[in-house]
Image (cartoon, rainbow, N blue to C red):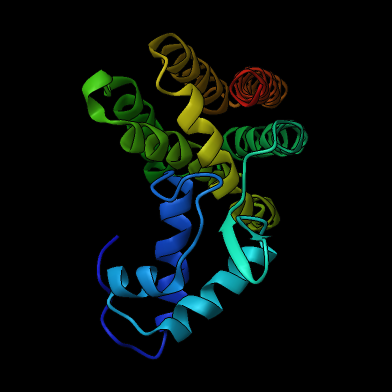
Length: 225
């Protein structure tokens, strides 16, 4: 984590830094949280760290342990499976709406280029890219898909859940086979959107999210067992 300058939005910046540290598993599930240590690493006082931790606790990324102690929340396979069920429905809706907008001429040339570029960049990442870059590329695709839908409620609903999903992605995206399959499925979703085929785009997005959720749940269950 990088030290932060003092500013009026220090709590927000501290929160953002801690969210990314948890999402990227730099702060690992179950790890005890020491406010003084975090404050020193971020170059801030303990007050913004304390406020940020309360926000993270409400989001389910931090949990109480012992007397007045906090730790990074452990990853619950059943909870993640339920989250992916919701994501599958919203991903399907986003893909359908994006394909409808493509069919109706609402997607711009810039939109189409961004989607094609996102797919190309994701498929070009090799094993030497590092897990954080791999996860970031995956999340970038899904955020773009949500944006192309034209429905802000989809992004507003899913955005707070991305840190939970990013932690689970750390488990599966280190597998080259899963990674290759995921980007092949991303490309299929993009192809149906760019072809203006809403039903096929929705099916591709739903199947992708359901498969990702099942694989992630299996791996997390194995690791926790």
